[in-house]
Length: 206
View 1: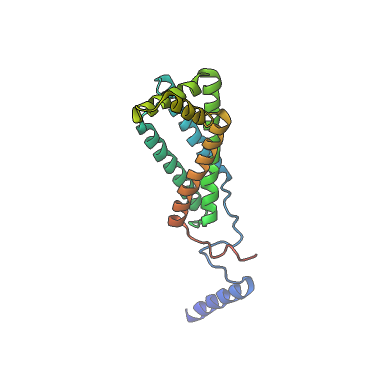
View 2: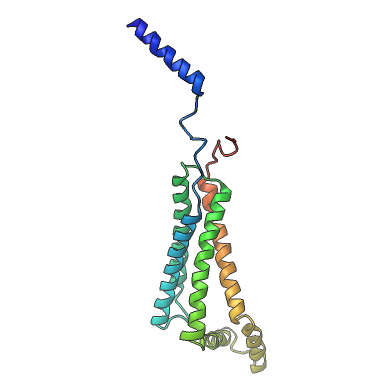
């Protein structure tokens, strides 16, 4: 029996000396999971939900002056899908996540979603409701009069002329995309700081 144990121990030592010892906690030859598919899947999902909310608002004739609850629900859905995308990547990447990876995934999801929202916005303002911009201006005019009932007609006209410059399709598209990217940056930054776990083998060359 002692001879058998010594023989097995010798074989193990020979194997270690010949092949080298590799830690089991991380396979250094393992390729990092690409975040591209997660960005696409979650971005399309978030964009689809955004369009669905827009369709509901349009169908119920609330797209010009939607209730504040729609913005709250949309923001919560946005946060949930971005955070879940980052979490999914971390789990698929062996539990490791860098801040840069979190930002890349979050901003990517936000960008894809913003493009969906932009497509819907262009469809609605150019095909479904071409008078959408004028309706928005009418609502803003009423709000100005409610807040400042003593405003003269000349002052109101100058104010509405200035406001109308921010209601152009190009400006609206830019605000929608940049706003989505900024919100995605903030959400992914916070999520990345909370969930980050650096890979100790990331900088080790094979």
